[in-house]
Structures are given as structure tokens and as C-alpha cells.
Image 1 (cartoon, rainbow, N blue to C red):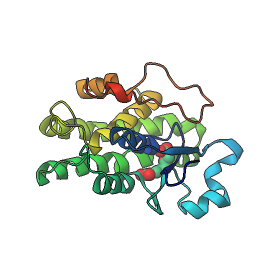
Image 2: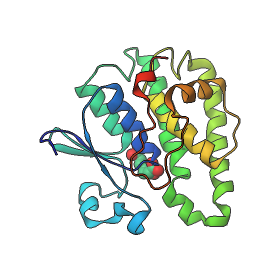
Image 3: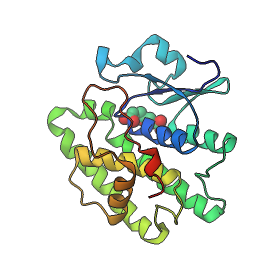
Length: 215
Ligand SMILES: O=C(O)/C=C/C(=O)CC(=O)CC(=O)O
């Protein structure tokens, strides 16, 4: 592995990891991936080695510039501050607040309610209903917010951190729910998602079609 390259600890189905993968791709940051399979071996995130990197035992974690960062939004904000092109947080404070609001809504108000560890606690027979309720309720709020913030993307006409959160959340929703998606979600999906689903055991299908990002 080349010295000095950032290392992303990631799982292909982790929507939080996916946010970071999009940020790294948009900013053209070369990096290595170490897959942490959240299912195999009882969950590789629970290994002592990984816990030393991220005591929350969650992906993503990014080793970069001599530090290790956990939590996808913290990672994206670090990338934004150290590698600012292209911008993922708008210069305008009001738009930036909207981007953070939407990102937090998804990262704090939807995804954690339907992630793997919570679904395990809920139990197999209630999982789908639980996840659908969490996603539908969050997306209903989001749809309302997007009516006043969105242009071509979640906030205005530039891709931002909010879109990096929305795209993987829509993919989760498609997997777990039957929410009727807004035209914005559909447009984002057509831009960002591969038509092919990842192979079930793959550790790293890259669903991001970087070259299509400006469609
Ligand atoms: O990095 C974050 O912001 C949050 C990470 C998680 O909550 C871990 C997780 O749920 C894995 C996943 O994305 O499914």
C-alpha cells in the first residue's frame, strides 16, 4: 500500500461509508479501501484491531494526514476544510445552514433508526415495518424542506454534502421501504446510482459513477 495515501475503512452497504466515498471521488482524492464486513465473522467492526481505530465500532473511518476520523459528516467536513475543491458546503451561510440541516436530518434522524445494529435489536419480524416507518417519517419532513431549498440538487443547483447524505439514504429506502420518491430523488438516483445492484457478498462495489456526476 502506498505510503501517505488515505485509507478508508468501509463496507459496501454502509450508507455512511457511501457518503464519504462520494466526497472522496468528487474531490479526486486517491485512497485505499480496507473493507470491514459488518456481517462476516460476527461483524469485523467488533475486532480489537478495528475498535482501536474507531471505538464506536462503526464504519466509516478514514486515516488521513496522520489522524483517524470516524463519523461520516466529520470526515466530509475535514475533507472540505483541507481539500476545498469542489465545494461541498456552500459559501453562503444560509445555504450552508440548509445543507447542514438536511445532512443532520438524514445522518441523525433517519439512518441511525434503520441501521443494522438497531434492526438487530428490533428483531427480524418487526424490522421492515420499523425501518419503513423511520424512513417514511424522515422523508416526509425532508420532502417539505426540499420544496424551499432545492434547485437541481438538495440546496440550490450545486451538489453539496446534503446530496451525499440523500443518495445512499434513498438506496436504503429502496431496499427497506416503498416510499414514493420525489422527482429530486429520482433525478439524483439516475445521476449517482449504477443500474446494477452490487453482488451480495462483495466488499466494495463502487456504485458511484464519477464520470456521470455533471449530467
Ligand atoms: O459515520 C457515521 O456518520 C455513522 C455511522 C454509522 O451509524 C454506522 C452505520 O450505521 C453503518 C451504516 O452506514 O450502515
